[in-house]
Amino acid sequence: MPVRYWKPEFVRRKFLLLLEMGLILAGLAFGWSAWKVNSVLEQPLHITQERLLDVPNGTNPNRMFYSMQREGLLDDAVWLRLYWRFNMAGTPLHTGEYRLTPGMTVEQLFDAWRRADVVQYNLTLVEGWTFRQVRAAVAKHEKIKHTLEGLSDAEVMDKLGHTGVFPEGRFFPDTYRFVRGMSDVELLQQAYMRLDEVLAKEWAERSTDLPYRDPYQALIMASLVEKETGIPQERGQIAGVFVRRMRLGMMLQTDPTVIYGMGERYNGRITRADLREPTPYNTYTMTGLPPTPIAMVGREAIHAALNPSNGTSLYFVARGDGSHVFSDDLDDHNSAVREFQLKRRSDYRSSPAPQQEAKPGADDAEQASGADDAQRPEPPAADPSATDEPTAQPAPDEAPAQDAPAGGAQAAERPTPDEQH
Image 1 (cartoon, rainbow, N blue to C red):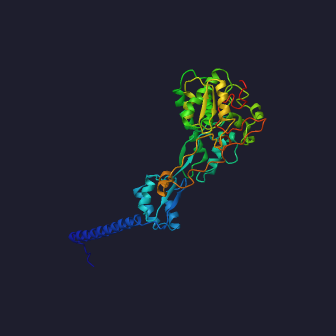
Image 2: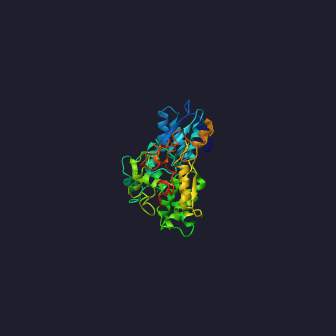
Image 3: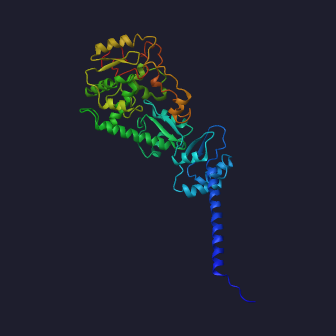
């Protein structure tokens, strides 16, 4: 048989036809893919009420897509995986919780992931708390990853990288924001570094001629001021009294140091025997500062300790409304003791009465907290040295039972009015 040859013109036409068909098919495939991807992105999540989506540490987008598909939250995980690979390959997926709401689309979820719009929680550490209370508040928060349970305070400081540092007063009181899964170690490290920063800044701007060898002694003084202050305006005056007494070699004689030295033995009352008991913290039996802070302090207390108010007063006594009477000499102080301590009013308080505040609406509370009701924990068991309840009249052989911080550089406030110091 004779060999048949395709004419060049026929081949060219055949090629163009196939090419045209290929382009049409490719266009159709591309269009369908674009439609499919768009429909997958615009699909609403299969939820009927608000919920949180947890993205654990180390999870990648592919794993999340298939996990959400297994939970029935979305469809077509394969297409989402392809979309992420070709369009968001360099976008990190941040660990944390993301808020999902009814009607939310996959595209909106991707936008939240892109912006790292994770749910944040709050934990407030309060001025005047002891380290025991700080640990209790941290341990109570369910969104924190707990790694310090069962460890001693010394072991906790080892974990924080501060071996040998006594923890009392070394953390800054503030509201700390974090995402689910943040460890207790990370949070406490933040509070520790924050205290160091504030203390260093205030130390650099301190007044001259202060009786402190180093910033740590100023921190100790600040803790006394923190525990003794009932109203903010008196911080500088209280610090001034303490500083002047130190310069004169007088004992500070402040009740919170007695209470701290008693530890768990303190039951809300201080007797004369307690005042005479020598502990490392009892400033009724020792001159100078106690060896460590006795509580957590705010910036204002640190500032007051490093910038005490000028004056001549050496004594102060609580009025019973949160404020104090300051006296220059013992006679005036004894008179104030008789008026405000030995004849206590029925509504005696160591701090001002709390103000009634309007409760925010649900929307306001949500915006303010950024999470849920667990964000700001209820304080742990109240520090007995900060009770506001009036105390009973003491027995004849006891000093007036007084709740801190209403005491003061009491000097004669605890002993009988005519006792000398």
